[in-house]
Image 1 (tube, rainbow, N blue to C red):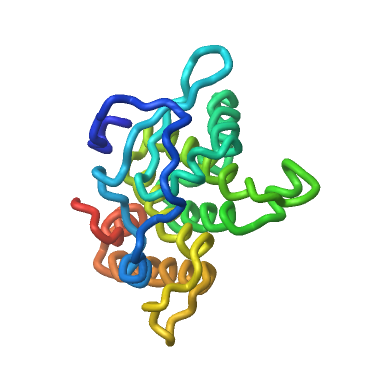
Image 2 (cartoon, rainbow, N blue to C red):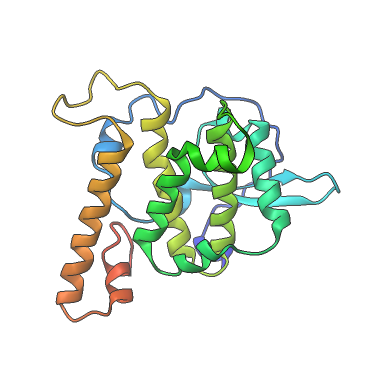
Length: 220
């Protein structure tokens, strides 16, 4: 199923890579303002490998927009490797199976709920919170791509939408009437998606069919 994402296959690269500036783009205003729940385009996903202590590698599908300062962080490596070595999907992953709102809400929670990180890993949330969470999520989504490449691509798009809001200051070009915080923008995107699903259901589609039809940018 990984091949069904039609991800370009350049020479595989191992961490660590040469660090690049910690930005998603110089001007992410338009893309963030216009975000709608849908799959990330295949050309925006790349394949990488994280080396493991035993000489094996942890394969990952990673959105190219994720900042390199996050991907190069040891916490990101450690999270991906730990997830890979666990070898089995969590109950949460099993519940994602074609449930888009559950998936994107889970991604939002993972990237914003510091209580999750504090309770599981440390007594105090440190600067490696986001790298760890991103590392764990990209391995979750890589595994998900083995069974549902469309849903995995939807999940990969959501961190690309959220990370600028979590790591970058409000751009000068950001509309004054628009909030610059992940919560209201995430909620608005999910609400709009649910409305599209409802519309598709009213046209006689099953709930599962409606969820796929409601994905913006997905070619049926």
